[in-house]
Amino acid sequence: MEIKITDKEINKRPNDLELGKFVRETYWKQKEQYESNIDEHVRLKTNEDGLVIGVQNIEDEYESCVICGRKTSYTKNTHVDMRRGFIDGVGQACDGSCRL
Image (cartoon, rainbow, N blue to C red; front, side, top):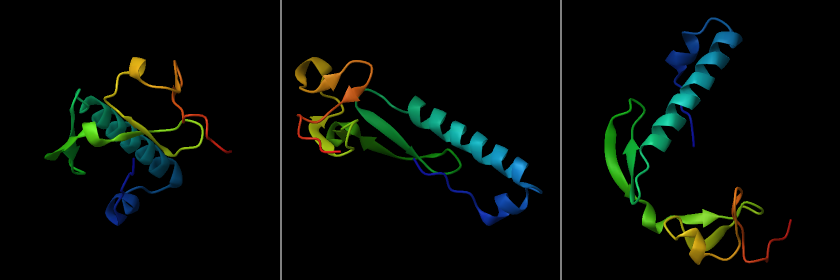
């Protein structure tokens, strides 16, 4: 997830403490909004003002390996019982070909 902050928003903060607080609050707001927009099959795309600008189908999104970060062969909507390498409480891992 990316956070975009404008020059105007930066210049409105008189010191680094307030700027850091603003960045942190912006991050948590965007993260909460992102997670609340996840449905079983679609995710809402929003702009920086929080307005919906489109719908993204998550069926085509592939899981990333929690060990090496590469894309796996499993989509996000594949049930965990149908996957190899899924670790409860951790997430999806590769098929064993990870090289750290």
